[in-house]
Image (cartoon, rainbow, N blue to C red):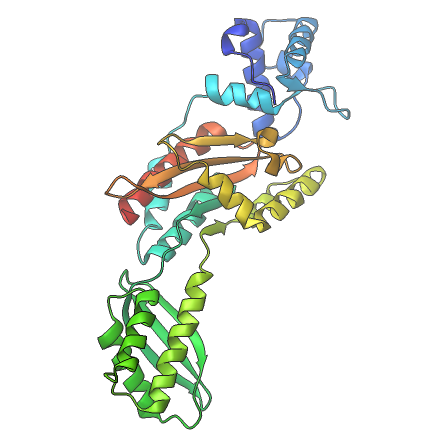
Length: 345
């Protein structure tokens, strides 16, 4: 895609009309016509306004859909607006409080809740990506569900609690469940899942694990379940996809379906967010600037957040239609990144 012309290439009249078209399109999702602009207080005739609109169209900043006499900004036009004309609107105290409220609790829950809050406030789908990392074990317990199954309850060092159903060895006694949980907590606490499996293998091989056969089998099965689950642990959390449908009119539904299809391809979205890890600035990807959104006409706003050691911990952002309210959403993403940096770092 060709670069947008510099803002200095527009005279004051063209700049004012262009800004009004962009503002009108973002607010309504509809092309903006010369009659609407003339009624907005511009001291220009409709003919003069149409001439300026035609010039902006020639410059590649506006486009005229076949079904309308109005104009709407192109991806190039939105890029010019975002980079050279946008006046950011800082989040209100209430919006900041809603984002911060989600940042409590275990890390994964905090990431999901904060992303959901960002989604609700921006009317977009919220995204957060963090590196794969295994939980560090604090304690493990086995709760009987039936004669053949038990619930493995893992408590991580960060306070997170997760449950998985495991099959029980044949003829295991209730006392063996307690024995297995106590052994894993005492022997494997403070280790990641991979480290725990290595430690367990050494303990069993050296004969230091004072477990009967059933308890030993249960410990092994429990670690296998957790390790396999950890290997599949998602690096990308998406919240609020339904808001994209709520905000779409009938003519826009096909585009939104394309966007939801894009969100199913999490690897591609994760790769896009990963490209935002470099530097400290917020990255804005508009429409066809990225091949992933050539069909859906979507935009992504993303910002990395860092830990106390200065290293990038993850990336948070939103995805929505190109007509999203950049002036409001960009500062909201910035604040969310700062909130997660304080929580995760």
